[in-house]
Image 1: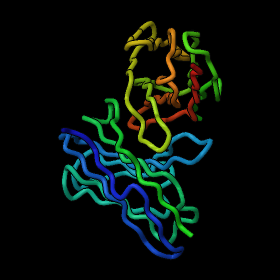
Image 2: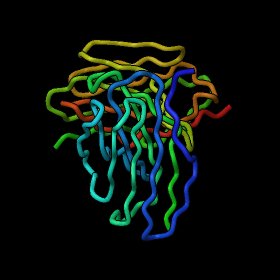
Image 3: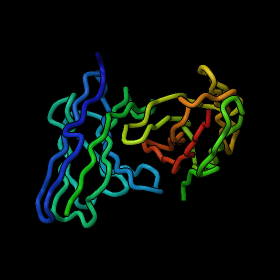
Length: 112
Length: 108
């Protein structure tokens, strides 16, 4: 089955700790994205990557970092510099930036 | 500033009662408009892509239409399993802009 996997589904961390969220796709898509979803707000773009070893900041990149060492993987690190990290994080991929995005199941991160 | 607005925020329908959801946008250089369905606690599921004014797409009880400034998602004779949040997104340049969604509840 082709698709996007995110792990874990739920993640709990203490304030001040960095945490890495996993995103893997086997759709052979070139482009991958990370979004954050908060209640009452639309999805907000954190980072996106159009090709391996290249990525661009989205609207809310501060306090986050990414890497794209392999086509199928695009992990997101939430650093201690992110002031309000508790949220639902969604990873997506697409054939190219001009095409529809397909989403993973999401990771709900809670930082206390 | 680029913006996507969805209305209404919430909609309750009786089973079989048809209605429409609206997505209006103010972006420069629209490259595409996308509709998604999102169930609670899950990732959005892709429904439709529309590229130009006048275009229409259908899938089961859903039909999406596009004008120069807005899109409608028409739901014909909805069933309880159509209950979900429906998200609209527009693409300008290399970025996607999402609306906050319409939460649809279909009552048996």
